[in-house]
Image 1 (tube, one colour):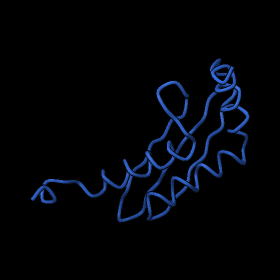
Image 2 (image 1 turned 90 degrees about the vertical axis):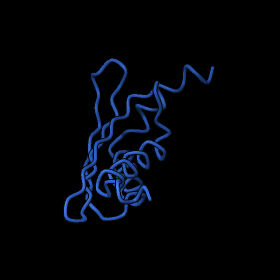
Image 3 (image 1 turned 90 degrees about the horizontal axis):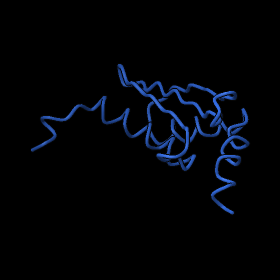
Image 4 (image 1 turned 30 degrees about the horizontal axis):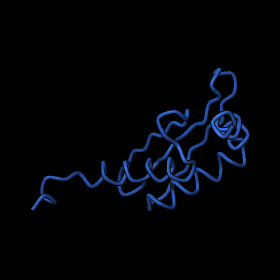
Length: 96
C-alpha cells in the first residue's frame, strides 16, 4: 500500500548514502559526508571524509545503478585516497 506513496529515486539515494556510511563506520561523531541523487535510474554518490580540524579532506564521486555497490565503491575510492588515515586519527583517542 505504501509503495504508491514512495519515491524510488529518493529511496535509492538514501540507501546509497547509508551504504557509504556503513562501509566507513560513519556516525554522528565521525566527519563523513554523503550525498546521492538518482536520475533516469543512474545514481550519483558523492562523499567526503574530513579531519576534525578541517585541514584535510578526501572527496570522491561514483556513479552506478545499485545503491550498495555505489556505497562500497565510493568507500573504496575514499580509502585509496587516504580516508583511513583521517578516520584512524579520529577513532584513536576513543580506543584509549
